[in-house]
Image (cartoon, rainbow, N blue to C red):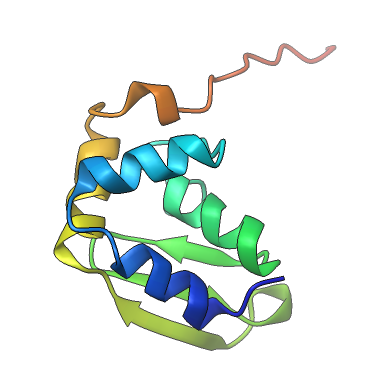
Length: 107
């Protein structure tokens, strides 16, 4: 697994939201818009670090300890990452959206 600071630095290295989107697509990352724990950024961080309690909002990246207890990482997004998240949440990157699966359980 990759250290969270290395992953964070990678995300901070993109100058535009479109560059970040192209990178995430090249990594096969997909996510759920308007879902802090299912966002494409969140999923990329989880894939890279092995953390299973990650949250992303338009301002920062948050990682919690085992079982979601204790904030262990909280750093602000760059403008490019924040722009990506806003665009992703508003449908600008449809290729990065995880298709929704309807589940009709047995009654």
